[in-house]
Amino acid sequence: MTHAEPFYRLKRLPPYLFAEVNAMKHRARAAGEDIIDFGMGNPDSATPDHIVDKLVETVRNPRTHRYSTSRGIPGLRRAIAAYYERRHNVTVDPEREVVVNLGSKEGFVNLAQAIVAPGDMIIAPNPTYPIHSYAFIIAGASIRHLPLTPAHDYLRELDRAVRHSVPPPTALILNFPSNPTAQVVDLDFYREVVDFCRRNDLLIVSDLAYAEIYFDGDPPPSILEAPGARDIAIEFQSLSKTYSMPGWRVGFAVGNERLVQALAHVKSYVDYGAFTPVQVAATAALNGPQDCVAEFRELYRRRRDVLVEGLAAAGWDVPSPPATMFAWVPLPPRFANMGSMEFAKLLLGEAKVAVSPGIGFGEYGEGHLRVALVENTQRIRQATRNIKAFLAGDAAAA
Image (cartoon, rainbow, N blue to C red):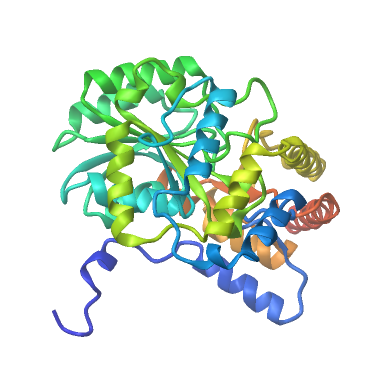
């Protein structure tokens, strides 16, 4: 290898597909333009006071400044187990079936390092949040993409993927409610998937980051509620969205003991755990008053409704997402041939609104935009007015 060649693992990672839109956004802001940013799913609400207060109280104790525990302090693991008991009616052993992560992304990467051998085949949804695929690609696996669109029958596609993958796949990635599509599933879906995976010797890695951000219907279930799931499944959750704690970097994984312990084993070589006061504050979040969770849910519901209604008034009909903090928006029909990347750039340039192009979430995301509900309702209304003027002007020009 010469010094000019990219390193081996970097060869498997494509250029960051949002980089071009982000660069345009930064240039526009540097020029003094007011850009309304729906690009990154970065919660804008303050973390609730009782969680911050617990952090401040704990950090004043110098004993908490030492190395922490890689797999999570016992109190936090017990709080996670209690959450699963009351929310999902699932009993997990905090000693053997729970591990604390530095956010879900770190958890995915370390799990992949633990369970994947180079050349293994992993089935991942498409479109999906990039780490669902790239955690395993970094570990040396190959990815079989499973289309996650209304035009595809999920279980039929899953059966086809298993029958036609060489080598046979070793794990299936699930993410419901989905980032970016906001698709939700019920417990019957999980029952069918678990039965299928048990018959086909597949592990399941479930991402339930948006468990508490739902608007229509019943609360999203955990895959661990499905009979037999504990034999093959591990599930990741995060406090980032539920409690508006994205920068705190604290999440967790629960489920199958073998998978949890494999993840904990790798982590023991990689980190000393999150800063102890952060873990104590996370414990307070899970054990404390939950009014804030409902308030954040209602906040995102209001933002969703303002966005959908505003775009409809602009002549752009979009589906109302049943969950998550995202809207998955098809391109306006007359721009459908442009592609999501070019339309996202056009929207930024003409309407001063930044969004994520669907192609950044996989090939089956083309033709869509992901709009993050991370601006207040006043800003969302301004964005839809800007978009209405842009669309009306384009129609007049045409």
